[in-house]
Length: 66
Image: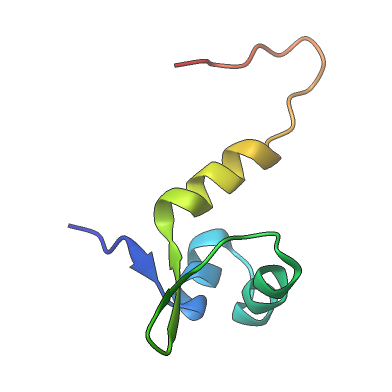
């Protein structure tokens, strides 16, 4: 079973970007995060939604809707 909440380092690895970019995007409000006491974590479900929202479809390519 995979963890749902990820550290900035794990979220960066998941997205293929640096953990510094994850922090920068969080500060800019580009990605959401969960604050549990002093820890800041990133929800894998929210990261997947962000990926879906950032997907660009080329002209003539059909989007697979579920």
